[in-house]
Image 1 (tube, rainbow, N blue to C red):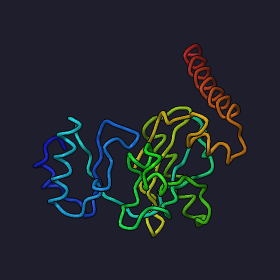
Image 2 (image 1 turned 45 degrees about the vertical axis):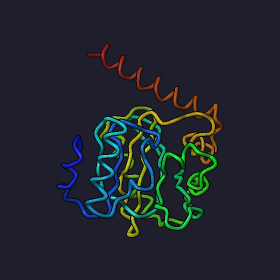
Image 3 (image 1 turned 90 degrees about the vertical axis):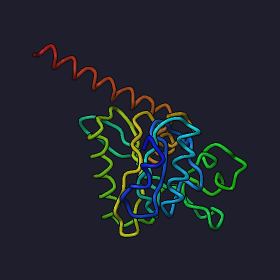
Length: 212
């Protein structure tokens, strides 16, 4: 959406979720980005257009578990252990989303209420479906070497892709390193593995050119 008045014509079932088209790191995301009626939708779209001067995306809000899947590879893509957001400490009445405050304001209740934890109790069929969908999204958007696919997993186990991150943070305390540790990889081993994957891709591409 580039104009607030166009939001009134959105034909999607409520609740809806509004986010910026050209940002990451949850910039612009607050509690009222989850909207429950047309009036609230138009109001929030207008506020975001005015503040950030860029288009906004409107999508279905899926209630459910927020699961993150880190992937490594190119020809063969493999997932690291899944993580999800533990919303159990989120204050009552707040939507279960990872807002800007949840990521960056350590003194906020949202920060305390959005703890990343390893995925534990989950049916094997759900895990397989999430893995297939994550790899399909990775390939569809032509990611290379490593990346992360974020999901909302509905109550019936359907995985909905909410974000595909081609250059996710690989600092030692970020989610990719956290997933690597769960797989038994130290931080140097993780960085080394990413370099090896990238080098293999580069070498194979240049070998193919020479052969042609």
